[in-house]
Image (cartoon, rainbow, N blue to C red; front, side, top):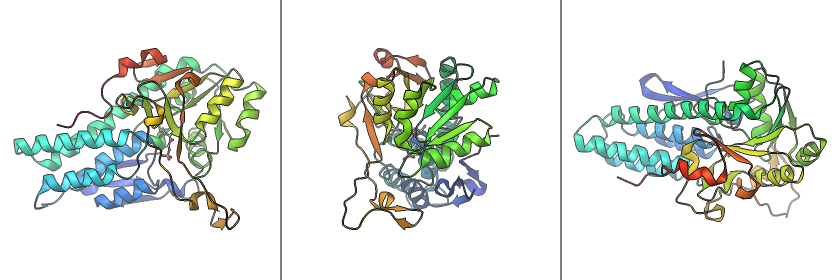
Length: 345
Ligand code: MRU
């Protein structure tokens, strides 16, 4: 049984696994207000590109509960607030555009806004679960018997509405009885690899080894890594990929050692309106995330800190894209051209 990072709770509120407390504490929050959901996304209590799209969609439904004076205006305000929480993952504006469009449509027809939004948020979640399954099937042939996959950050159950993107082929290989091992970068500064990827893989019995990010190149040189698979927060029209900071360096090291480097992502992560990587907005987070570890200050006083949450890996370093339409080369991405951010209604 995989952990469940999000679900509906009684009265159509949201039950959310607080990922900031993992792996020490498995604690669920019940969120009843839109600004609680915005806070949870901002502080990475819920994170991962597909899952923040789903969480925001579920969050937008909260604005239509009860009897607000102007329900449509309340929902549109909620969508704006939720969309502004994190700039890089395109799944967030993609989901909010769907919710706005569904709200306007329901209002025009005089339907219950709350019921319409619940249906749309649930559809976004269901579609993501299905896309994860397809990504798993598309990536399965890349995992050899006895193989070892290196991954970065967390692109698993804790980042999606299903079995993950980068981790989906690994889960399917493991379930099929194939012996597969994972090496997980710890992923400084917020340690999504050490805290989250290792936790969810160990829950499922997948043999996992955590390494510090600085060890990845040496590990790739050892020759025991079958392939690298990572997730993505936004993929531009030319195939450049924004993902967790450190992905670019990993791709360079994989290229230097002749190890295939795959990016796994659902259709909702492709942004054909952004031509290339330099056009992708990169979130910069608080310096405290670098300055402090476990409550202790580790950076010398007086020193500055730079803390971009993501980087861009150029398309020419990427061996292939594991998508819900199958394993695609850079020249085949056009097949996914369903706008990641649909045109506003
Ligand atoms: O800052 P985070 O933890 O939200 O970053 C997550 C990642 O970078 C993931 O690799 C990406 O969102 C893909 S999740 C399927």
